[in-house]
Length: 267
Ligand SMILES: Nc1ncnc2c1ncn2[C@@H]1O[C@H](COP(=O)(O)OP(=O)(O)O)[C@@H](O)[C@H]1O
Ligand SMILES: [Mg+2]
Image (cartoon, rainbow, N blue to C red; front, side, top):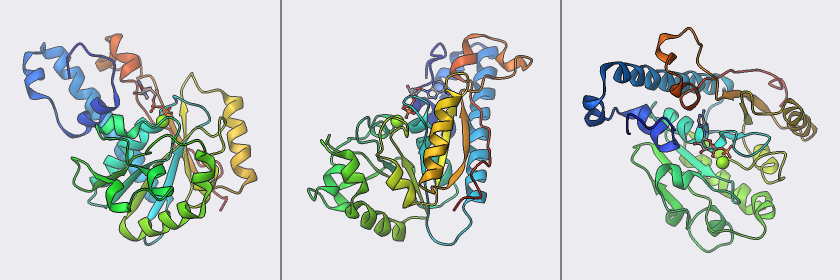
């Protein structure tokens, strides 16, 4: 990662979790090196906190599966799904990440994988499970990409094939993390949530609209979907933190999580 590249992309976030680019750092001025280290540390710590909260939210034996969603596009669902899946896989759990956003797939791009064959190809009977499960550089993380564009994503995701598939996958993995389409835009994600232990809702600070979130929560409550908690994305670092005094880092690396419990009583 270039030292001047302040636009954190998904891949960079993942790299930030796992390793430090020594060659780049050795050429960087000491202050920037110190800032980058502190920022990477903060990102990694945020995902560890999120991971712990997820582990405490789903208390059961066997596979734990959950959906990461939000009201609207571009609130950080895919970014958070990838990094959460990596963080969970680092506990030695066997983790599967599934991209169920068949309309705007992203997981393949974040992990440098081919999007096809994927979930849609499997669901229409074109490919077997072994043909669509991708290995990743992370030893315990397997990925199921979205697959070819199809005219009927809602029907496919609500189908009995999808239910049977999830049941089969639950036998093979400790965690299934599901990236999804936005809840206020299309109905694709609702039936999937019902087949899992619940949904984590991503909210983007100063961007997500409270009324949209309220609509999402009401819709989820109407179908008795379990809301596991909320993840606050894009939180600006505190101004008095010396590591963030340099303005250019404030947006790109402004990462943080708030965890709520609204809806957690619902089953
Ligand atoms: N906290 C953040 N800071 C900066 N960019 C972010 C952050 N979270 C997400 N992004 C970027 O915003 C864009 C949309 O994120 P994405 O995870 O694809 O959203 P969604 O899946 O909700 O549509 C991506 O380019 C992603 O890298
Ligand atoms: Mg997405």
